[in-house]
Image (cartoon, rainbow, N blue to C red; front, side):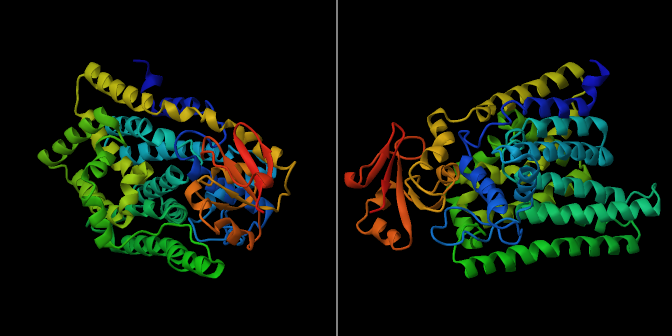
Length: 470
């Protein structure tokens, strides 16, 4: 096999180039368009309303300001900055995430190589690259973006404890560790579960106590902003501006009950979603080898990360098995174990055949993510069409259930609800007193047709009906 094909940089670039296909697509693919449009709403509102990062706002809060507690909007702000420089486009978040997540693969490779060997690092990185990481690293979502920052932080933590580099370089590594960890956990709190791995160098007797104390202080200080943001500022925004949007978990008892009452869905999050079936089989083989051969470092990584992730699962409750991106923080650990198992296959033909099977299964099961929903393409022209009948500041009600996607493409603010709720006696009248001007009934894509008072109908197409609220 050519040397370049054995260079992980070739594959990281190759995966990057593949995911550039359709990179300019609007957030209308089959899965998670709703999650992506909440991100883009915040970015657009930074440009149009207020660019203060401390006050993110979305468009489905009715007559309220839309300011609400949510994930720290660093990712959203980067999209906003691209808007300022290049003009507004829906897709900038895809490119930002893809670039950062590709660097995440590179730092993952270097981190694993530092502690194991090149074979484990190569195998693990390829497996991570074709895992669920592949599709989510091109979505306008902060999950792999955040994990990439945390993985890079762990890499620089490793560099800090490297006794073979200069003191100034050690200090620089410590600074980068603290900065990247702070940003990674701020952007997505669950990514911080990997902080439990910081215990490994802290209990290692080979490292000087003074160095470990400095490291522990840096780690602790880097987590303070996330603690303040999620446990003080988020509740403050919700209470002050009266709109709840962000999920902060459930009680442990509720979480346990929700998980054990849905064992099949919970288990599927491990054997199907992250690595698919071939990858999961290799992961089980690697896990067996870790314990049978008593690989102490991998055992420590597995046990510590599993404990932390189980706690995260419990706090997530039904959301864990309801949203497949909840498994993303744990996928690098699974990829590491699977990569270790693959590295034990000494015959090159079997090694590459297994890697090919895992890659083929992983990638083919994610190709749907390159397509956008044809039945929703009319949303791309919705804003311009609505401009003929309404003002930008008119409040709308859209029958898209809990989905904010149509409101984002309408470039309006207001409420979303399902047909049943809209048809309730007095529901639209009560919203009219709060400023509701128009009701948009979607016939396809995100809603199903329903008829309101024909006297209030302003416009109808094959895709939607626009009504005055009264």
